[in-house]
Image 1 (cartoon, rainbow over the protein chains, first blue to last red):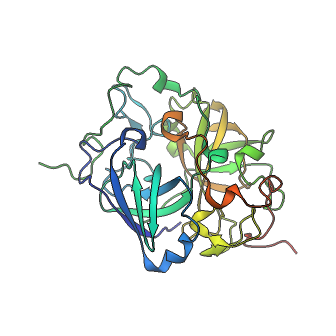
Image 2 (cartoon, chains in turn yellow, cyan):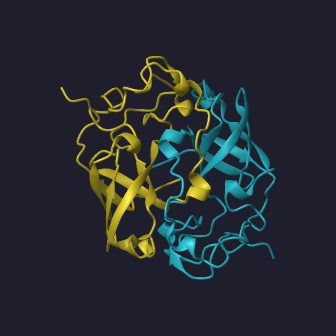
Image 3 (cartoon, rainbow over the protein chains, first blue to last red):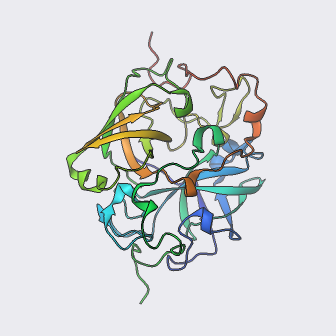
Length: 162
Length: 162
């Protein structure tokens, strides 16, 4: 199963360390999503959605691990019980705020994605499909660093800076 | 960018026609997600999450179209403004209810996925990351069939039954 980039994400985050770990802790960050010309037609009517899903290829993640210590805990968990980028198929999903659509450029806010990340898909965020408030969140309920761990470090980075 | 199946989804839906178009209109449907043995370790601690994201390869979708008439409307829209499966990278995302984890088998409910669909990833659904109630949903707000179109038909099916 082969996927191809449909665009590229230009963000202010150039390395994992200090990048927000999720959109909810990225308030104030803005980025530009460049969609390649061959796919521009597919953006018609995206304007009007308040949020969109970006699916992206975690190109800077280290090779897959099945057990990880995620950013938000000090204990190991199965990778499928975490949102860590070092996954068998390193595809991330983020529900970001859509500010504007200008031809092939999307301005977005609340973004937690590294600069240069290949874009795989865009989908509208539809509350009716995607919003389930107050779901039980397993180990995340009780982990000790839940309130403080809002920024990444380089634990999952492929090429760690010296 | 190459992805590999990490499992397979066994569901009661054998063709697109009459399959629920999203989990919210699939209440009562149950399915089994089989994770391949090589990836079983990654399921540790998934139990306890009330919902999980399934990322899957829309293997029965017809080739990508950039403009589609989605199930929920009679008018065309850019594919990235819809959740149609006929996408440049045919990856679907569904937030399904997790009933149980029994070794490599997940029992899930509220599933909108065809039988035999390759599984690409599992992520925990975390309301803090994923739940944004009452977001403006663009063209979906006003489309005439919003209340009635809850089941798919074969418009995006690769091999339409005779």
